[in-house]
Amino acid sequence: MFTGKGGVGKTSIAAATALRSAELGHRTIVLSTDAAHSLSDSFEVSLGNEPQLIVPNLWGQETELFKTMETYWKTIQKYISALLAWRGMDEMAAEEMSAFPGMEELANLLYVIHYQDEEQYDVVIMDCAPTGETMRLLSFPEILRWWMTRMFPIGRKVAILAHPLAKALMNMPFPDSEVFDSVEELYLELDRIHALFTDAEKTSVRLVVNPEKMVIKEAQRTFTYLHLYGYFTDLVICNRLIPDRVKARYFQAWKDSQKRYHQLIEEGFIPVPISDVPLMEREIVGIPMLMVMAKALYGDDDPTAVFFKGRVQDIHKENKHYALTLHLPFSSKEKISVTQVGDELAVQVANFRRNVTLPHTLVGLEVVGAKLENGELRIKFRGGEEPS
Picture 1: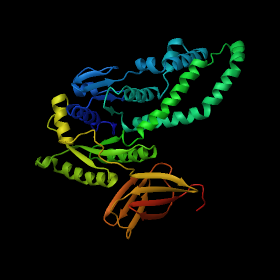
Picture 2 (picture 1 turned 180 degrees about the horizontal axis):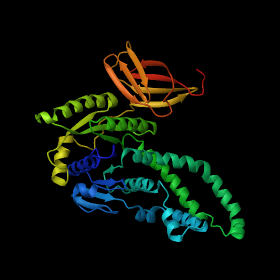
Picture 3 (picture 1 turned 180 degrees about the vertical axis):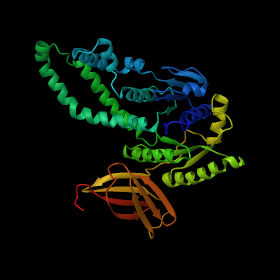
């Protein structure tokens, strides 16, 4: 899964990766989950809701919500539409509104499960929406599963008991067994989605950044939340670095700025490897230029390899305290400095520095201890409910 702030070049990176994967003989499909699809523009081919062959071993797909609804949501949508119409909404508007937020994201995840079951493809590459939407995409299975675990059993019983009364007195549409069976099937699919997407042997997230402050800050925040949801990042791609061969004085300030921010990228994401892609001389559009980008990014390597394994950070609660654990290999525990400013935590261990963007849960909580053992730094925060 490729994600990053809007405009960093993640679609080009995803497309280039897909081409390199196909070139090596892997049956590959690249799937856009962004409502504003741009894969077609990147490849300079027309893509739609069904997979289309682009080059040998490579298929592309840009999903369309209402065609996907027909496949995965027909029964559930029909009930929701009837309920909205009963509440007085125009029939056409009710049908439109029955596509509630989150359906498109979930449908895209169901496509991935479907492709895994079919075994038609060796590699599925997801060109994800900008980071905020991607986090909703990745958190959706867990959130919906939580809701269904608590509401579904009760809802089914209430519907069975109330259906005759509601039908007689209010002519109100109630979900029948077909609707509940569809929801139950969806519930089981959520478990499969979560298991697949949190399996480090099968799935990874790759963050695409530019050497710019706002982009890096958002990527760091995404990096933290990916770990909260149990997703693994195996590569950070720094795109559009001005090459050293550019000597014009006009670009010197930009090059100096990029050098500083590249250091910040290293401090924020190490030990995850960082791959650099230079700013190209031409727009990255069309297969020839995408192959140039793939060569710059991967060289002779296989892009389907897992470039990093392991959890870089972990956050959990221990009694009344929160604990943040950071993976810091080869560090010495003689010198540890932890400084918190707002939602940022600066960790200095000897000559090693790491900047961490804290989740909202930890912002404002006092650091009450830090301990380094076996290459892991464990930082304890005082819980919000415990008096200081």
